[in-house]
Image (cartoon, rainbow, N blue to C red; front, side):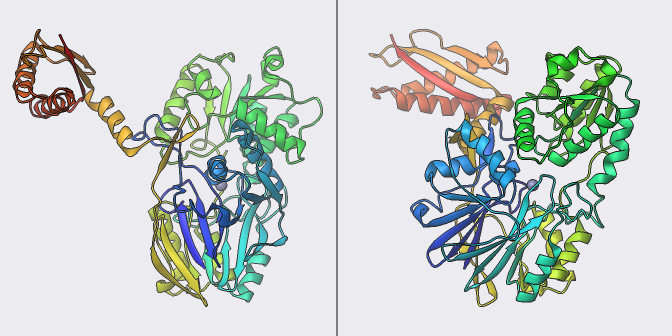
Length: 541
Ligand SMILES: [Zn+2]
């Protein structure tokens, strides 16, 4: 069996692993990664599917461990390559996926499974186990082939008192351990965090405190997939006689789905629409929206900037019942400042116990290693430091260090008779999505955008006499993002004239345009310490 992660190793996002046996392929997860500041204009980042092209018909199924974007966000793009790949997952995950696929006008071939199910897809004998996470219906998957038994946990934690009483199936992990797990692939996100996570239910006192004491409206922001967190908010609001409204497209959509499928329970008459809620006594109102990460287009950021139908007022309370996803800290603090300026009292994980993570920390992972007792370990879902910390835990529990693999996206591992070996690598670079088009931006276009942001742009218009090849008029310079002086432009004109001379015979003019533009960038880099994105246009008089 060959195993290759096309994403998720070295980054928190775009999780995707391909398993190959007997010429057939099984994929586990197909997620997106969210862009950072150095990737301007990008919507999301996908795994590179080029390894699968030409073999798409050999794919027997795509297993989704749970419904988070970093595990399902790439599915529409994979299904654009082959629409009838069976998508195998639990009920809520497939329901969340379905609404996503509708945006892309794709139906998808769904295969419902649940914990305890054992199903064969091609040569892969799959068993699904319940795991607890920050979204309901998480599944770990055991993959059996004649080459060995693999257990991938998906994202998980070990809350022993979850709201849905569906705990991570440690008995199942132990049973697989008895059978002999040849390769264990555990979630690494919190491997650096010592000890054990608090229970989701431990947040009740802080949430209830807000509902009880807030003098006016409570505006809660959380992830639109965190059904259990939102259930706790609804329960607390109900206890203190408040009504709720959902605000924002993804929140309304997901909560409607979750409620229809029975994952979210809202007492009769408690849910009203946002307009109705506005008319109620402020101390009876709770708004539930997205935007806890400071996303500029989300409802909460727009409220913070006074740019939303819902006006924040002195005495409103904003509850950020969510994590600070690494990389988002600056925008979250800016959001908190903006909300405070509007007069809101902001309750967040820094000043109240209103969030617990969805990923097992070191103590929980160690339990898993001791239950599973794997022969080989491939830590997944994490940046390099997380993978390394997880690997160290495996070694500490007695796994032979040479059987623990800290590898990057694209590195292939071959598993045969219980022995795992690194066997090579395949392409696994970033594929950038813009306006729902994969590959719409490239590394080069991103470099240009960063250069535009840092160094500005310079456009030069030249009127040239076709007979003499010389300038008819002084060049026109248009600089954006910086202001060259008159003296600078005289120097630039000199470079233009000198370069033109050497291109007198060039009828197309394109060689001259390129050479002039390169000459100007070189000069500007030397003289002005900037390399503007330069465009030269030659017009014959
Ligand atoms: Zn997750």
